[in-house]
Length: 464
Image (cartoon, rainbow, N blue to C red; front, side):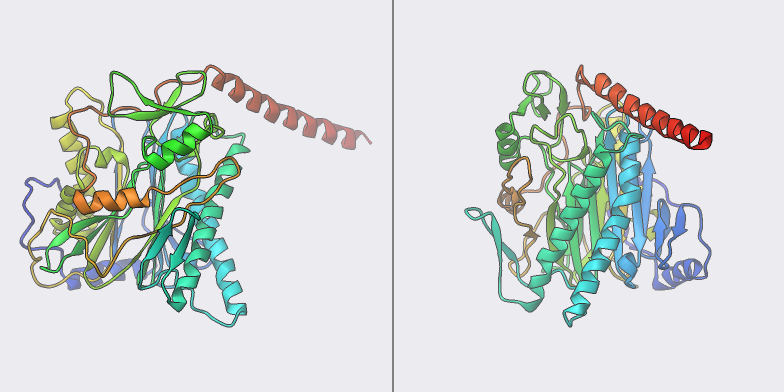
């Protein structure tokens, strides 16, 4: 199954034929659930690795210890045929792998149940149409921190989907804060997820993992469109929120390009992202679990979506990723090819640095063409007819935030958000707070006390 990409040029043969795809899809449809695949009550298939007729998944452990990257793909998401959920999660901190695994296992099911409830509510209102996107863009209004949709009947459902996603993310984060089996004081995870629902994409982003779209421009050349913003602490809106909550944002002298979040009175933990699940030592100081949401109306020009952790984006640019995926002769190998190229680039560009974990999902949006792929163009060509639509700014209980959508939009029109240049890979966390071990001990003690209390009550009941 697929080797490394040995050169940068796009394979002339293109992706595999429709006949090969039908064989692959038939294999899965015959009921054999291979390794890494499970099924839940409503028939939804859940994949943790491997590939199917429309997606490819692959992860590789780096040289920093346990693989803290996690990923998942749900077929027929929410019980609707053809809908897909895929998510990639990049853990950090001592127990980041546990946080990432927990979010992977619980976020899709929480979203699915809430979307089903939303669909049921819509049905009671006399309509079964749950489209979350419209043909027009959603415009920002920074003064009122609200959004304005151009006149379109379908647009009214988009806010409902956004509220559902935001509630699911924040509920899961609250559950993590009360979970005594995972120490989340200074451990957390990013989360970038995509739901493909009919002809629409809804993208939810938390942290610095990324999603991009491979689409074709007016000249039929394959170009990348970045669907998410890397939510770093030095983005204007993120920094403003953090500073207003008494958190601090600055870069160390030895890594001037890496801005981090620090506690008010201590130079720790130095988290290199502005939003995340977990990391509760910073949740009172500007770190939030509210995702940034965006939507995209799919057309026949859109080819595939790539979701990946920063281990890949730190060494490969958007155009390199699109170029590599399009060079895969077999769809099943696309994610593996991508990760292998990232690992190889790590070794050559940063020979003294430890290679980071890498995880990627390639979601293909249509059947491959029988003809060779047209030429690739690495530039970004925003079209006037379609725009990436970002959600409004959500207010949280601890603070209010402003959106960086306009910042992203301006950057996308000029140049893509490129990979790291001239610096080596840095850790997501720099230093553990002194009180972290105390808080962890207190949580364990509370758990032991609860167990002792239950055992004592049971003994009393047995005695009586």
